[in-house]
Image (cartoon, rainbow, N blue to C red; front, top):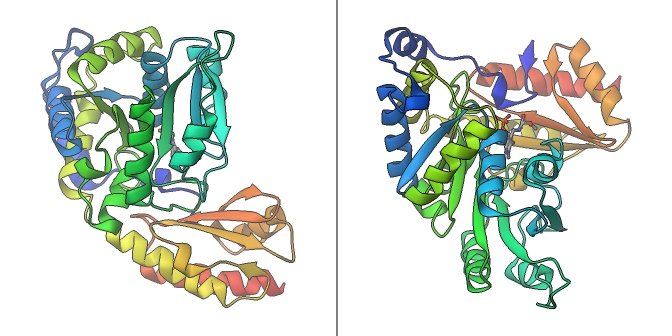
Length: 340
Ligand code: TLP
């Protein structure tokens, strides 16, 4: 099977397994796991923040950030198609008790005007906007990179209006490699940023939440409240250290593969895709003749797995475990799928 459902399907490398087997560990609830602490320090440095915290998943990283930044009943401004709003089972409502205030960002990226417009007047019975959540790259907008100038404007506007900013950077590594902009620059101005080790970087599990020392102190308490205080988790952090140290630059290969796939798919009648819009490792394909679920089934019969994300949309994600030859095989299968 050529598995293009997500980059989360990547398996840990031999170097990661070795590092995991040899990891020095301790009880991280007492903050005594040296491998976890090393991973957190390295991540904080890379992201240009004072401190970082290892969390089991990207979802928990986002949820902890929302809970620390925004009290119940207050508003969180975010793009209508972002992960926090749509794919975390209403966690922001369930756990943080906050009100989402979605705006239709352009390709997933809210503008400064949209953020300004979403902040209500300060009449006492209005909800108060407390937090702005942004996503880079944007998953459902096809792995697009937040235009840097717009990001700066949006963050500046939010800060001026007294909002804190959280960046869901599950795939910030992809944005950095594709744009050549350092991670710390992409996270500049955000009060907190979450990055994921278990997607393109191929670690088996884990994400990092970074921010000020004070923010991380609160995040440790909130993570524990959510049941996310882990013990000898240096076993996982060891794989994360290998991921940060050796797996970032190779994402460029995934981006080349995604572009190649998009170019081939664009030539097939029954599919619609603009290869110019493919900036990183996600390809969102519109099916114009057949329902997406049926196309996904036909792909599966051809040995290619992808995700149907809307009645006329499929998502295909490139990653470490898919070679160029397999991309070409998938494109050839797509030709048969569309004409069947
Ligand atoms: N995304 C997964 C699915 O949940 C859709 C995927 O296969 O892409 N932020 C963003 C932008 C994400 O894409 C994801 C995962 C998360 C947060 C959550 O990370 P995890 O899966 O570690 O909880």
